[in-house]
Image 1: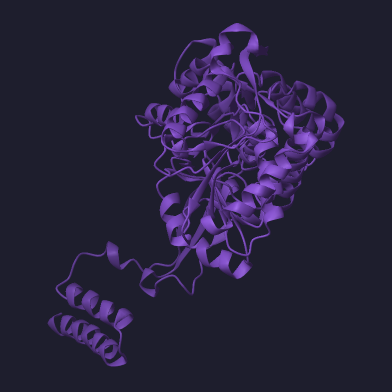
Image 2: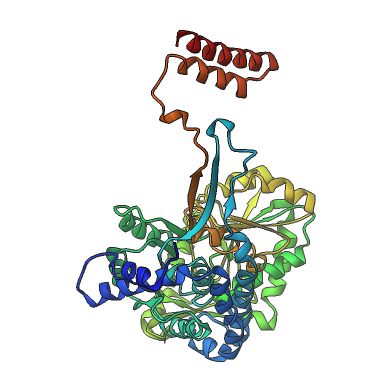
Amino acid sequence: MNVDASFLSKLSSIPHKAGSSPKESEFSRAYGAQLAWSQLPLKERLSRLKKVRSLLVHYRRELADAIQTPTRQGYRETVAAELLPLADAARWVCRRARKILKTRYASRWVTPFWLGGLHSTVERVPHGLVLIIGAGNYPLLLTGVQTLQALAAGNGVVIKPAPGAERVTELWVKILEESGVPEGLILVLDSSIAAAEHAMEIGVDKVVMTGSSASGRTVLGRLANSLTPATMELSGCDAVYVLPGADMHRVCDLLLFGLRLNGGATCMAPRRVFITRKASEVFHRLLAQRLAQENQRDWSSPIPTSVYRRVWDGVENAVAQGAKVFESHGRHPLPDLRTLERNDSSESGNTKTVAMGHLVLTDMTPAMDMCSWDIFAPVLMIIPVDDWADALQADSQCPYALSASIFGPLEDALRITKYITAGCITINDLIVPTADPQLPFGGRGESGFGVTRGDEGLLSMTVPKVVSVRKGAWLPHAQPPTPADESVLDGLLQCVHSSTWLARWNGVRQIVQAILAMRNKQ
């Protein structure tokens, strides 16, 4: 049977949830658009998405200007951190999606012979409407990749942008619609929490969220009653292991890069550095040299006042327990909290911010509160250890497990990867390798579950649908039970799965004897 337009029209008129509000009607129309989109051949969907890359180039300046993230360090950082990775992800999806999402045919050689003439396929079908709860720190890249993969898989998309990301989200949807994505297939909500709550109340088929672990728990609580599946890409407090033999110059350069990237507002930013006490002196000296450089010592990033207060409280607590604030060039990196109520805070958008420099804490211990916090600020905590068993034990006390980095000889680094709990581990680098569009990304523990990006992320935007076709007339399970059935089935189990040939032969003999006995009775 050919699925014609009139048939799709009838299905499209069925609302996902009855209701008369404008928003519910909008969702109902989106389901209709999604149904039509999912019926397009995958090749056709991808041909439209191919245009996204060139449109990203065309609108690159407008996109950069639309990003209101206060910690962003200018156009150069936006190109490197968002535009280039998003364009690469668009190219990867268009090149790889047909292979990843193709129908799989069950092997006749693997199908148990007692199932007879069975022909089965496994199709990858879309969820339906996917709600994407966007992040404010990388509002284009994260939402963009998730949207592309959802659309390629045949879904419709509902986007709840982070506060401040409304403009760039609207421009992103404009790019998608100019590329050929049907109008109405993507809904953009306002940035309020209530908007996401209302969307989940109306009903969506999957939620992809990027945010804090606390927010993730709230969202999961709302999804529990409807059993709506979710991917939770949550916070991090990432570990860095500095092994004996590591290139300390490289370590310090990359730690500084990680601290400064997006003003410290990166979920994968290095937070906890494990280094042996023997190597600490050299490490501290090299790090101090870099922090004292002219282009470093005056660097600062606007941090929301609420985040800054939390950092201040954590520092006071850590110092009281023996930690030290690493001062470079004779300057303390934290403005006095008591001055915030006067004139040291400024407005960035609608958020009060404080200019904060690099904050490096030494002599930290894993028991200190800050070592288990998700902090969106340029904070680095140095934790001295005796050996690598000690480091692994210290790392395990943190509930977050998003990513980790190891610096040192390759053989030694590879040896300890199996003992580190993290969604992603980089060796002799940090953060940047995760931009490879073919790699999945996701965390464990407090850092969430499920993945986005890569083959696995694209597959997660679908569900498997199995279609089994019975061929032939042999249907023993449709026949009335006989006294021989028990012996035949028991013999079959022995014949197929026993560990020795003798036991298998005994199974065959039992089957034959049971069948002959039944025939003799007849």
